[in-house]
Image 1: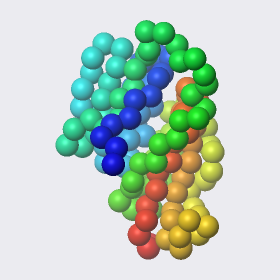
Image 2: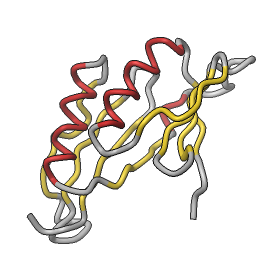
Image 3: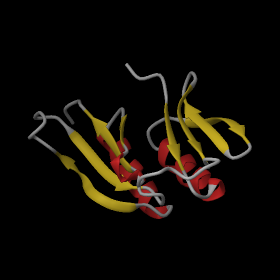
Length: 124
């Protein structure tokens, strides 16, 4: 079980705008701000974004996070919000039956190259 995940970002202002919009679509909100970092979640921060004091040694492209969405409409909203706020499409919302018959997900890449997914596991 994961308590929280931290992602490096290059511009905290741009990243906050992106994550404020994208995570609101699946029911999360910014809960804490500490200078060059911000925490997102519901009951407590599950995701932290921060400008690192030293840039990461390798590309962030290996980072993948899937956010559970309450509905397929929320997956669609997540994907649309990401594209509207500087994200790049990495797989339009739709069924991915290779995982299971009701696996409905949308995939994006955030402005810093992190791969994000919103997924709903319930039937329409």
